[in-house]
Image (cartoon, rainbow, N blue to C red; front, side, top):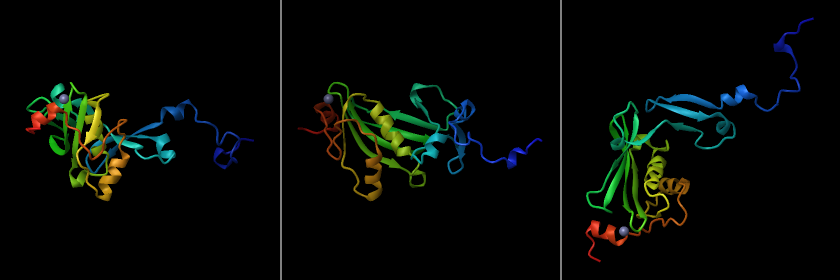
Amino acid sequence: MPTDPATQPPGPNQNAEPGPNQLAEIRTMGYDHSVYVPTSSCNLCQALGLSRSTWFEIDLRFAHEAPPTHAELVLVARPPRMRAGAGQIVLQLRSQQIGGLDLWLCGIDRRGVLGPVQVDASYRRRGFGTTLVAAALARGPGYRWSTTALDQSVAARAFCAAQRWPEGVQLSSPFYCSHMKLANGDNE
Ligand SMILES: [Zn+2]
């Protein structure tokens, strides 16, 4: 006699490991309606309750390094006017700047200094600040990094604690090399 699958008791395979079809569906495409941008989610991360299980799709090419694309979120690097002077990385959403940070880089001393991270109030808590920090750090791989004085608000301290800082980073204690000082107009 045929049995109705819906009324069958749970079989021994109920808690089996995911099969190939389930593994293929480990990533879910989505859409964030607050900023009108596509998102991706890792189903496994969500099941495990991990933070950052959903992320925005960002074109990680810097805008001046690539021809115009259809990308809606774009990182733009603004080089300093003088070598080792203050440059900027900004994040644009459909050509509107929604965040940015200042940074100083010296290839001779292999030093980098990060300034305060700014993200427009209506776009916070989406990982944009983290993206800006990661993009800045990626400009000086293996460099020794420091930051300007950090905001001591609870939100700023939580943001700082969540960053993946490189080893040996000096927080709130900027180290400007002689080239940066020269570019900054310091007469030391
Ligand atoms: Zn230097």
